[in-house]
Length: 423
RNA sequence: GGAGACGUGGCAGAGUGGUCGAUUGCGGCGGUCUUGAAAACCGUUGAGGUUAGUAGCCUCCGGGGGUUCGAAUCCCUCCGUCUCCGCCA
Image 1 (tube, rainbow, N blue to C red):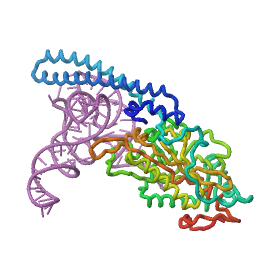
Image 2: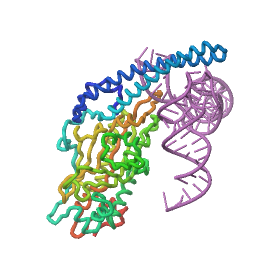
Image 3: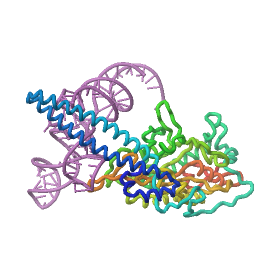
Image 4: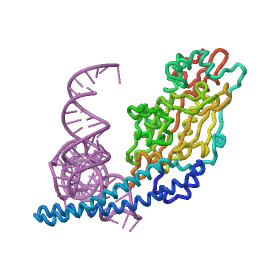
């Protein structure tokens, strides 16, 4: 959510930058500012009325003590009138505030000035590409074939017990997943992230806090009986740990990591995108989150990106980094980098991480502020990134490392798997 | 799930209708004293809105609603915590 003060002061610039995200509903911004004007005016009227009524009520107390009943009764009448007036003003103010709030929630975050215009992933900018793509021969198999051949993942049984997009990992497939979890969590710990294990279900307020609601309602699994949502990423519970908090500047940065299962409805996906592990309804991920001083968030973003790259390098996977264009940058993000690994048998790049700076957008929604040394308060900046998502890493590992009759496990994972080959 | 108790400022804990945004203690910050520190003493110390403003004014005692001239204090409701019972990984 944008700060109303910021919107008031930089309206034209904001409209211009939102166009980069293909947000062209400028009428909504005019409406918000108009409502803001009304809000402040009504607030002022209400304050004055309440002040008068309060003064009058206090005077009555005094008159009662002095046994001046007639004067007290007179004052009561006056106060009753004032009360009626303030009640009306209060209702009007609530109405205006609610409308304004609702509209504000629908305005996306302003993209960073370096974000290029664009409509789709084709307009993303290649920042970096590194690593050696493996030689691919004709008998190279895609990961879903390998998973079957080596009995690592059972997609059909997943369909039976739940539905498509809910695979069952087995044997060395399951152990490899466990190895990834430990490797990613240990690495994050070493990089200074405090480990947490959050709930996988969150309430509505948390969904609004990080910006999934109301924008992505329908993408999350919802449990109506309790009005809970299954988390689409650990970003939601972790960042919301700091909702409604005022953090001392000297305690920054706050750094957390968490492993969690993630649940996404992925309505509308189809074709090769959902084949095998490429896109699932339930998957595993280690997420990293930081809460930082506004002056340091872009520096932090680069640091997080470099950390993520280091993981991919340790896994010996060829990768590339993209800066997302406006059209591909999510509702809540100001700047996002995607990290993709090359999956040899499919001959395609798979997104395994997305790291974003949300600036004050989430902090504003969830009232997460920092207190500076001179006692001033301002919204913090929040960031998060996948470090990393398991399924596509697994897909690339299987496809890229296949040899005659076996698959080689990268050296860094052998400590965790206790096997060198899948055979 | 059933019965009962309770939710007050960073924490502890008063206040049960009238200048209470709230006694007090601890913690934090500033000062006196000290070579320095501790102790002691003095002062200060929540959040939001409006505003050029660290001036004034208004709002906030779990959330929402109600009674009243006036509510932290009474009523309703929701949420949460605790105790006992039941169930249970």
